[in-house]
Image (cartoon, rainbow, N blue to C red):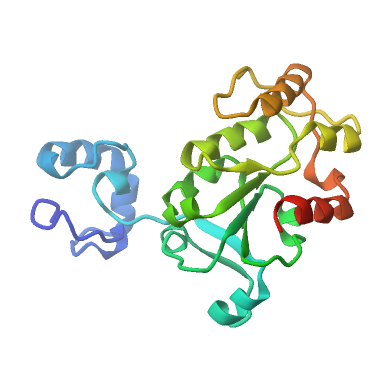
Length: 233
C-alpha cells in the first residue's frame, strides 16, 4: 500500500489493508524501520512522528477561542462565541479580526470583556507552537498575556519566533509591583531570551534570579479591563 499510494493522507484506521489499527499502533517502531527502507523517496524526514513521517493523518490539537465582538459571532457563528476547532481549520479562518489576545489562564480567557474586531485564544502554555500554522495571524495585532514569571516570558519569546510583532500585555514591572504577593515560580536555568524588549528582559532577569511569580488571577478584573481599554481597544 505505501509503495503504491503514498499520498492518500489517511488515518491509520482508514488504510485499505488487512491489518487492524491496533497492530500498527503497537508496532510503529519496526514498521518505521521497514518503511524507511521501502519508500525512502516518500518520507517526511523532518520528523520522527510515525504519522507525519509517512504522510498519514493524526489527531490534531484543538484551538479554543472566543469571538469578543458580538457582531462577528452573530454574523459568522450564529451567536456562538466560545469554540474549539482543529488547528488546521483555525488556520483557514477568514474573519474581520484586527486584534488577537492570547491568554494562558482559562479564567482570565473566559472573563475578557466584549471588544470590537477582537478574538481571544486560550494559549495552553508551551503548546503555543501549534499556532504557527495560522498565517492569518500575521495580519492582526497580537497581545500575549501570561503569568509574570520566568516561564511566561519564555513563552512570550516563543510566540515571537512565529509572530515577531506580538505585544506583551500586563507583563510589565508596574503590574508586577502593584499586585505581587510573594508567589514563587518554577526554577529555570535559561538566562537569556533573544526576543524580549530591554524592559521585559530586565523583569525576566529579576523573576528568573529570585524565582518570583505573579499569577494572572491576582490582578484585579477592574485593572485588566482598564488596561484593555488603553492598549487593546
